[in-house]
Amino acid sequence: MANRHLPDIWRREAAWNPVREISRLQRTLDRMFGDFMSPYEQSFGEDPLVFSPPCNLEETDKHFLFSFDLPGVSKDNVKIEVKDNQLIVSGERQEEETREKSARHATERFYGSFQRIFSLPSAVDAEKVQANYKDGVLRVALPKAAESKSKPIQITEGASESFEKMLIESDKKKEKAA
Image (cartoon, rainbow, N blue to C red; front, side, top):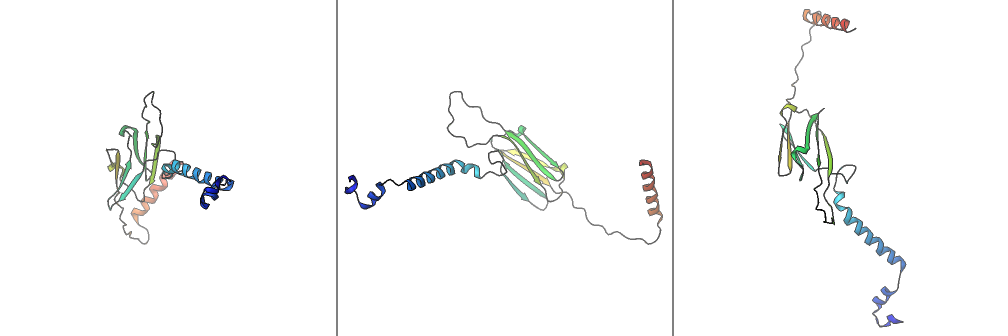
């Protein structure tokens, strides 16, 4: 036996064990795919390979402040919209052109179109929304709309002239519509 001059622990390792070899292969593949997929695991959304810019949200008594990380995105490629009590930010990060003879060895950047939609917990004043883009960070400030204050309604008893007029006008409008 050629292994008789080896220490006992090495001699046991020297014997070929198919179960051990398969286990090593599985661990190696798990590490390889784990290292490869780790940048994508941090993405949000249903498709982790799609560019989805990260966002921070702050709320004060008077406004909501959204901050989006958009490195490499031109402000001309970003659209901001407030619709139905939602903030919609969409745009596109275009892939940089590469030199003809260069070979790309790794790509960790995401490119393509994106759209982020946020439902706002309270009404905002869409006319006063402001946006600022600096150093790859888009900041959107949405002032909260003035809350409507409740007003006590006085209930009158019996027939009231102004109430009767309002009912008659309402009936006339219904007749014209029919």
